[in-house]
Amino acid sequence: MKRIIFIMAIALVGCGKQSSEQGDQSLQRMADAVHKVLETDRAVYTQMVVNRLTIEDKVIKASEHWKEEKALVLPAQMFRASAERVNEQSPGFSYALISPWAINKKNMPATDAESKGMDKLKADASKSYYLDEELGGEKYFTAVYADIAVAEACVSCHNNHKDSPRKDFKKGDMMGAVVVRIKR
Amino acid sequence: MKPAYRTAIYVLLVVTGVSLYYGFTLGSEDKRAFMPAKLSYSHHQIELACSSCHGAAFSSKDEVEKRCRNCHADELVAMEDSHGSKKFGDPRNAKWLQVMDAKKCLSCHQEHVPERTSAMTLSQPKDFCIACHADVANDRPDHKDIDPSTCTNAGCHRYHDNRALNEDFIAAHLNQTDTTTGTHRPIRTKLAKKKLVADMAVDDKHRSVLGEWATSSHANGHANCSDCHQQGKSWSVDMSVCKHCHEDSFNQWTQGHHGMKFATLNSTITVKDSALPMQQSASDKAMNCNSCHQPHQYNTIKAESESCLGCHADEHSLAWKQSKHAELWRANADTGASCATCHMPHLIDSEKQVTVQHNISAMMRPQEKMLQQVCMTCHGYEFSLRALSSTELIRNNFSGLPSPTHQSVDWVKARKLSESKTVEQKK
Picture 1 (tube, rainbow over the protein chains, first blue to last red):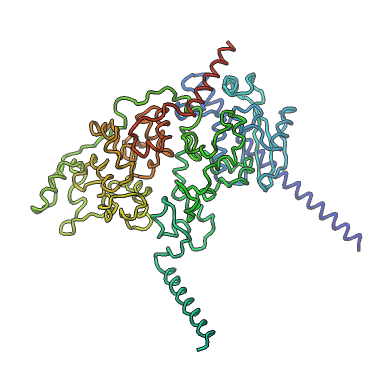
Picture 2 (cartoon, rainbow over the protein chains, first blue to last red; picture 1 turned 60 degrees about the vertical axis):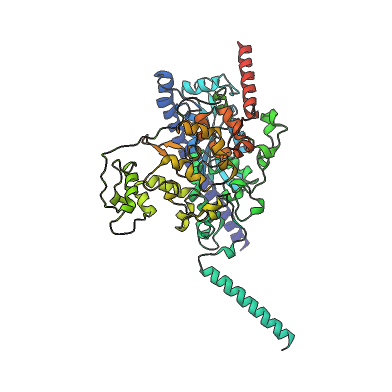
């Protein structure tokens, strides 16, 4: 009898673990999908709108004061504006753009997971990293992806900004990370 | 009768009386007997409409929150709210929510607590910024000895609207002249159509009214007698008739203190209902379209100041007639400043038409709402900021000059100077 109970307990633990792993795989796929959309939209806007109109055709400038100066919204601002609208709707996931070289200090890594993810990306930016974290009493599946300078506009803007702590970026460099969080 | 029986009867009578009173009150429209304490100035007009904030009886705080947003969400979007869900819905800011739930209006704006409620229904202490920004001096050493109760009342920061109160904006507007020249506000274009001939007969008693109408904008092809009046019926006109053509203005009016009671309770506020100092002689005046606009003259000049001063008697209003703003306005309505120039400014809508803001509360609080949208229409940034930092100047309707400097501007100037020196040194 004891043996049967032991086998059943092992089976239950195994099932639970398998279920948890499947859950994590599902969350990872969702985070990857969200990131893929973000990354692609960001690259399209940066290359086809900002880079083309500001650097290639020189018909309009992009500025952080886009409203006052009637200029294009910077790619990072576009990203954050969209993230803020998502935050307002509380859909169970969120995303953020962080960097250890952020122009605005509030966008530097702010949680343990962000710091760990950023450190791992500095070692190998070709991979994405998945971590668990608890913030404000809620548990999150957190994914961290490298954010790469895809156009000359990214590099020139950061290298020339008065508040930028790093001014030697080159196209193709990792400039920060995209963090996707999914509520467990 | 035994004393014990007598006491029991007394208790029974009192309980029955109280029960009847509250039972009757619960069934009536006026439920103020259940109000725990008075409402703030912001909402006192709608104290009879419990459900406009609470929904059904005993609803949750979340339901109340929803109702805050029903009235205030658009305004928060327009002012690019510096706090709120867009920022604190992000889990990376979750730790700050444990200090104060910045996603909830009620965290800072509680009602029925008059003993700790200040302007804008703020129920937090004046130094509440420091709860989250205690380390501000790390990035801004010049803020080290700042009294935290002055963060939001010295013209430096606001909790919600910081569009014109940030370093970049200040830097972009340094060294502007105190006063700009020329026409300041957008000029309204009056669309004149074919002149109308009155289509209703009037008796001798109303002959002067007909003359007034003939010189009004209404007669310029916009509204004939029969558009507002019905032959053989009462000449009085309901506000719904005005709304038929002036819907945008009417809707704006219902969003402010002049029309919020009408929008909520379908009855207009009277002067004696106001919590502000008002003209005693106007006590029984009710607030409707005709309070400001004469029905036939449609005299916007009168509507811009005389109508306001017919009711309002606070120090700021009473001081206007002797102010520089008034003197300039009397010389030219588009370069001076009437009550309406500042508090009901001209706006340019999405179709490039110039309209008048009829939400009287949208531009009623100088320090909180009027710097960029109103003052900077005629004045330079620094001058405006200095003027708005003075409660005394606001009270006396800007009769006098503001202080020669403002701390925020001085700091930005110093930082700019320091940055330019650094650039020079690198060269």
